[in-house]
Image 1 (tube, rainbow, N blue to C red):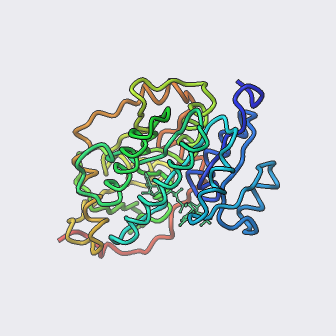
Image 2 (image 1 turned 135 degrees about the horizontal axis):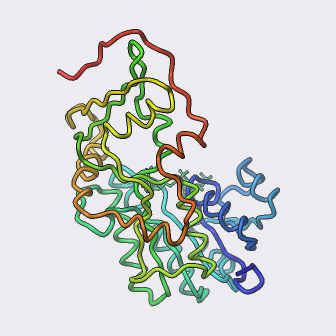
Length: 300
Ligand SMILES: NC(=O)c1ccc[n+]([C@@H]2O[C@H](COP(=O)([O-])OP(=O)(O)OC[C@H]3O[C@@H](n4cnc5c(N)ncnc54)[C@H](OP(=O)(O)O)[C@@H]3O)[C@@H](O)[C@H]2O)c1
């Protein structure tokens, strides 16, 4: 399908990681894209415009402008920004609801919400529950809705502690070993969402968990070690090491979430070229950090 028969796709969050990946997936498929951005003069917004993306200013206190931006859209993609404190969480839900209201007023034929894996469960994570509330609001809206629920971004390994100690690659996470962590690369979230937005993929039940790999801590460490040409070791750190309450709840949930089977085949059916973790490590240009020459961080 081309932009000719899909109409313009409006994207909220296009200057961010997920929305940016959705824009990439849409442009790669020849779609016309309009981005709803709060700062059209920002470098990221200008970079989108330079790639042919139409920019429309977004202000949460201007519902009429939001509706106008969505008028005649073929489809609408949105996510809600990260939140942590109770006030931020209420802001996240308010933003999501405002975007849904605008989509209703503009009679958008199909809305795709990038939520989070776990929003559909009682995860104990406040910024997952907030997305569950936006999902519920969408369901009540009467719109045609598809929910895309990404698992943990592989890109997070750019800042998760990976060290080299005496020639050994060491990964430490507050996550028990022997349990599979669900992972996906941003580009695959974008490609899956784009295919759905353009009507190139059907999602039975109206929601899909976007998961591309599921690996234990030792398997993740081994994948990085293999790339670095080093032996690897995983250290499961206790949850009590995590000072942030939300992060602690999230890692607790990640361990519980392995009880819900990952449907890798459903994602591959939409995006056959999905990256597993070794592929992400290779393609992201990840390189091992310098050897710290010490084994001083062992659990205990
Ligand atoms: N990290 C993970 O592993 C993971 C996994 C699944 C789901 N998630 C969820 O993904 C979300 C983060 O997505 P992301 O990484 O794409 O976010 P991001 O890179 O921080 O981008 C956020 C986008 O939202 C816009 N934005 C932020 N606050 C806004 C506001 N108040 N009004 C209007 N626009 C606003 C930003 O615009 P500006 O350019 O103007 O700032 C930007 O386009 C979070 O909700 C998180 O819970 C994360």
